[in-house]
Image 1 (spheres, rainbow, N blue to C red):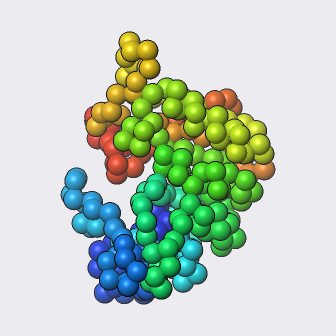
Image 2: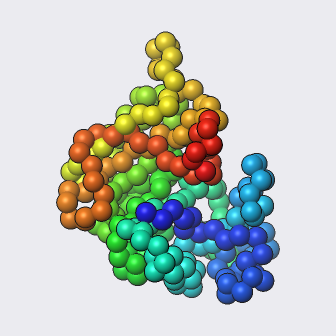
Image 3: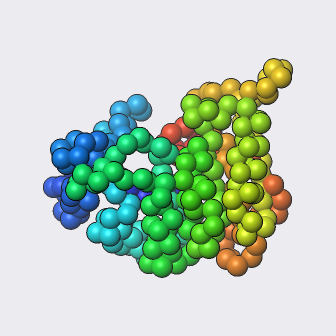
Length: 237
């Protein structure tokens, strides 16, 4: 699957010929002068910032879906793992209206499936927005990315995420999980030790067999490769 943020653009988007318009953006204020962003300075990457856009904006959706389709036309992706940043706080559109991102994800994902087909999965970071998308029939499976800095620090916290996904989505029948590179402790809470070499734990809950691409057999607690964390050997970037 391709892996791409649903609402981010590189620095310089206004002058790179992409056609992306700042009026589609998310803003920290109500007068469209301070665009929401995420710094990528540590470690240094090809762009110092990702500027954030309103996933509910129809023009932004048209742009990002076309960009994904262009990638799909070149590479044999069987779907899109649509990424997010979790709860980024209070943001506004360029009209000064507060944007509840958690409530916009489901509509965005449905439109993505209509435009692209294949398997659509959303990276619910820290479970943010998961309950709102859990009954969306256009998703291939539910996916949770768990992070210690978001309060998911123990095995019990991971179990809570799994239980919540079960409660929120009764239509998804088969589940896989596997725990990788999490160092156990002897504490009663079985704390997950944050470490630069450890990936975030991810809980996946799949639908039965209505889609061909995702193959699972039993509970698996998986990990994901992203620029957030890398393995100690640098193999996951």
